[in-house]
Length: 295
Ligand SMILES: [Zn+2]
Image (cartoon, rainbow, N blue to C red; front, side, top):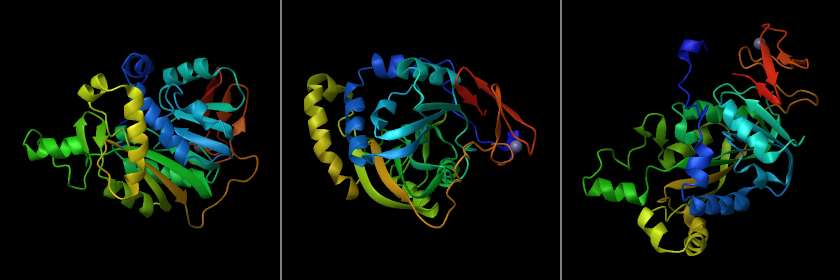
C-alpha cells in the first residue's frame, strides 16, 4: 500500500481526550459498565495481550491477568500519557502504529482488545483482518463497537428527526471519522476474517443525559450489568462488546520474533538501542523514550 492509498486515520495527537472526555466529562457510568463487560469477557490469564487504540491507558490496568500488554495507539502523546499513568513497568510495551498495517509478527498474541476504536475506522474490515493476523489460533479478541441500530437512533429515525436509517447494513459516518456500525455487519466481518463469535454483551443502555443526571450512577450501572446479558439475543444499546475466537489454520509466531516491518512485512527486525531495523527494505523505526515508533 502506498502512502497515498492508505485509509485516513483519526489521530488523537496532542489531544486531552483522556482529561476532557473521561475525567471531567461525567463518564463514570460509561467507564464502569465497560469495566463490567470487559471483566465478563476477558480470559482470566494469558501471556501477551494487544490493546489496539489503547489511548492513555484507561483500560490497561484491567488486563492484569496477562503477563505482558502491548499498548498500540497512533498518537504518541496518548502513549506518553499512558506511560505517566502506568509507570515504568516492563509488563507494558508502548507502540505507536497504524491498525491498518500492524507492526507485529503473525500469530504473536494470545489475546487482543479494541475498545472505542473501531468507531474511528473508515476501513474497519481491514483493521479486523490485521488483528486476526496478529493472533494465534485459539486467541480471544474482544471488540467494542458503536451500534447504529440503537434505541435512540431508531426512535429519532421513526420520528423523522434523523436522516440516516439505523436498519441498513452500511456504517454511518455521523461526524468526520466517527462511525456507527450495524451489529450484523460487524459479525459478518468477524466471521469472514477467521473469527468465531462466542458472546455478545450490550453495554451503555442508559447513556442518556437526562437519565444520568436524575438517577444515581450506581443504580444505572447495576441495571446495565443485568441487561448486558441480553446481548446474544438482540442489540439495541449504543455500544456492543463481542468476544470472538481466532479460528482456522494460521501461523503462531516463533519464539524470539516480535515486530515486523509495517512497510514490507518482513520479520524479525534487528533491534539497536535507538531503532528497530528492517534488513529487507532498510527502514529504521525509531525508539523514543520507551515508545516503539512504527508510524
Ligand atoms: Zn521493511
